[in-house]
Image (tube, rainbow, N blue to C red):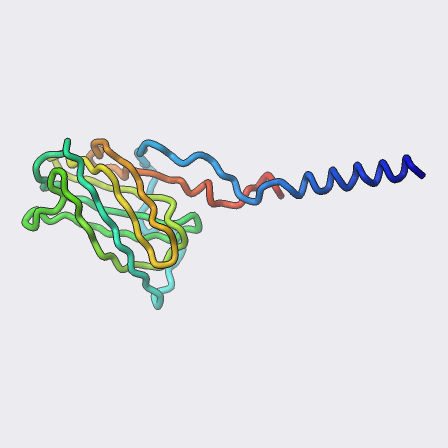
Length: 173
């Protein structure tokens, strides 16, 4: 009888230790922005056109950036489930946008997303704008800040993709 109880106890321990496998894969977030040559704007899940959410996005421009920029700056951010917000042009040299050592705030309407986990910037021009950081504020989620503090290459989406840390783990299946 004692060997049977011991075997059942070991089986229960084995079952519960398997159940303790995490449901989320929490990898380390990217600490440096990366180019993403395969990134496609608006090639994500179809959006519910009836729902729209408001976002506040702040850009802090580096003090190492040129005094002003004529570069064209585009933004795309989204979640791990394929929902994306895209803004084709944020720049306006006449308004002093993206000047050295400045902070610019934009109110953006776009499709509703879950927690923002990726953000890419696209720069087109010759001035060489350098963002310090970009923060996305959304209604239902905590703000997320992406630290650049580096030159954005011309003509390529450049940024962060930390979405893998939010996707369900396939190892638990």
